Length: 196
Image (tube, rainbow, N blue to C red; front, side, top):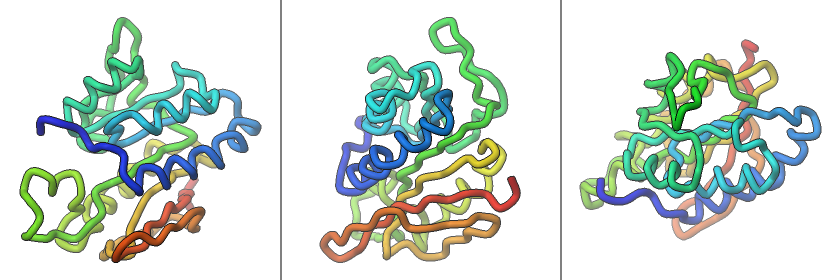
């Protein structure tokens, strides 16, 4: 990977959800802890900061080291991690400890969600392909995320009408935004764990 995922329609739809919901969440909890999985260009991190989440409460990761390096240059706490793989202990970032074993009030994720398509160039599949059916990476995320959500914590997750094989067991879900584009419809889901 020699670049990071640039914002597209799905990123902007997630941004709208973040812009609409964070002010409400901050009224309830001014010390809101925010985590973005798959930070890419850092658009959601910048949004969170603009919406007045404290910078020290904004965390992120990406599987792509170039995206992480970019987000660090923007001044954000970011680590290279495949989903929550590195979230078993603290990581030192510029002399401060990032509590990767902590819990978060809001986790946002714009995952690769499309089914595998052999016609797509191999180098761009990692950014867009979520597995054979499209939902495999999301299902791994959903299993891991419960351990990292605070009580009453929320997840904002982007999926497509083309994403198949999703397993939302243990979550309450509702669609908070949707948008039709080309041959698919995009959705931002708000998820809450049933077990918290």
